[in-house]
Length: 296
Image 1: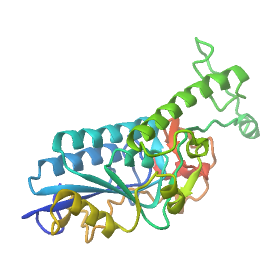
Image 2 (image 1 turned 45 degrees about the vertical axis):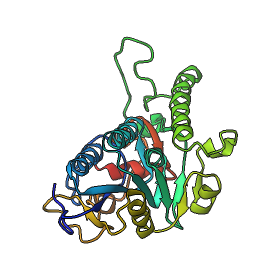
Image 3 (image 1 turned 180 degrees about the horizontal axis):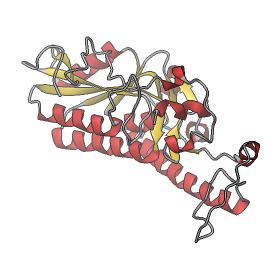
Image 4 (image 1 turned 90 degrees about the vertical axis):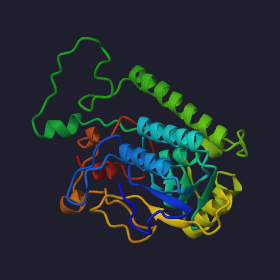
């Protein structure tokens, strides 16, 4: 991993981008370099930790969230990075910083939201579909051979029984409780007694600031300026870590990791694409076909 923009020859602020779905899997497709977002994030943190010129880090986030485990790994890695380097970290939320992306942001020392950011989404979702009628149209019938009544829990080939739904609900509730605890620990000024903050809804930047989910409304330049101030290096230059074939030209550049299949094959049926995402998600998901973007 190299620094494209201003060799690190003096005090610097490293900008690390986190874009797209947060899943612990390699992206594939025509516009993707096949990177695993979890692995790439860890690699960039390690590069920043090994660079003696880095005085602070800005994690630039543009993501609706992702898998529960992938999110938690990235959050844990950012906390570990802070603990071992003692470097200040500022999270900068761009278009979207919701679900697992906000979960990740809570590990930063401060959060700056763009004036038009959509954030929050403190909730969990498991997409379960009943494809029984759709399969019947194609003359298909599921005939699983199994041992253990619930080994096919949430299978799309039959309706979900009430007792099975309760099993899944209990798991969702546990993951949600963890999300809420992470927010409370990372954002102690948030009112823990306000249930609407934790019910999964998303907020504008202004609403998030009122609820103390973010510290400031501003732009990426403001986040960099905050990082410089926190590090005591007011003239630190901005550096980005990237592959040699991924030429970042400014701190807004990203590693392209969103495949184009959705544009080439626009049809995506919820349920049939279910295996493309992890089961439980910290994800703001207004469109269930979002899973098409994983591109497997």
